Image 1: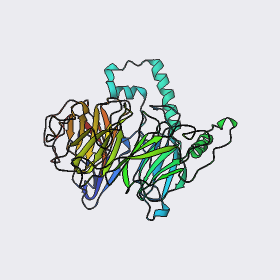
Image 2 (image 1 turned 30 degrees about the vertical axis):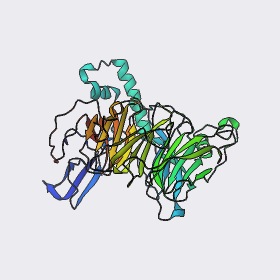
Image 3 (image 1 turned 45 degrees about the horizontal axis):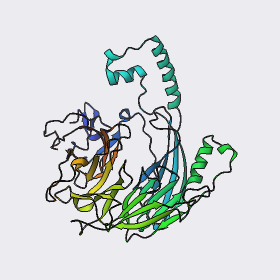
Image 4 (image 1 turned 90 degrees about the vertical axis):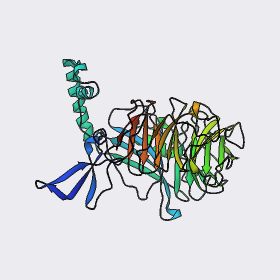
Length: 441
């Protein structure tokens, strides 16, 4: 319901006023109807601790964060991030892979004291603050006010790219290697070490007197072995340099790191750093529409990955078994495409999928293989409130029960640890979800 979901946007309706003032009401993409003529969405800044925005030259279909060396779970403002962004330009030769560093990202929401933060989480009766705490809170508030006065800084470098960029993925173990899936049918590998070195130097790290790394503006490896373009791409987090790419014809190619000095040596990356093999083709009952939409490697096993495919299929492969998947299930009886999937990095038996029909589902892989091929597996939880296709899923890196879900209308945070609600009809006429609670943005 609207009361359960904190609003990140408000809709103001100019034609309707009350006592001479514009009517402002909350809008929820899951329960509210479409905007009427004259209505517009306005951001409610109190819904965010930090909210910054920028507008690229061209639309972007994909981006990825590049890991830095500042540590995990950072909470202190100001924040910084390094991002790889791909373009979808009006002409093939105008496309660019842009590497940007965003720094001095200050808090933009209401600054609360540590005591107020504790009250929000625990309630006042559990907050045993003393005078010393109050004094430190005052100092912290002064620091927050100073940080809030900072202006964001954007540093960026653009690299030539042949064709629009369907997907971007940076290698976790070597973040200077950025892979792109081009709509021209090629997979490109870029070495952005020179750009990252420049970012580090601009932040005050002089590199210990070493010479700056030279920029490489073109990909060091262009692979054209796929029969057509694709969107599915993922690096293994278990085995360094191992990647899988899937195309719209249903083919999956496995990338392996080369042995010897050509893989990530001091001289840089080259076209001998990886070997690629065409490992899998269309299989099972998904022959007519076999497009591979997404790929995710197992967070714990170096040989296992899962795919989301058109026609409602999810498959699990083990690269030790050639030519066929270990498990192939049609999870959508209506044949709706499975657009995305996400493997839980903390609980490796949990797999989330999102479909073209707006259904978001969580599966327990221990029960994913049904007794009969004619029987679909039973999900751990299924959410049917979305009215638009699911376009992205991402598990929380440190909380096994939290997952972010995006569709064409918004982004939502689900907490799967919440006890199951009784099925009900909400105000918008959308069936109640089961297995968790959600917040919309």
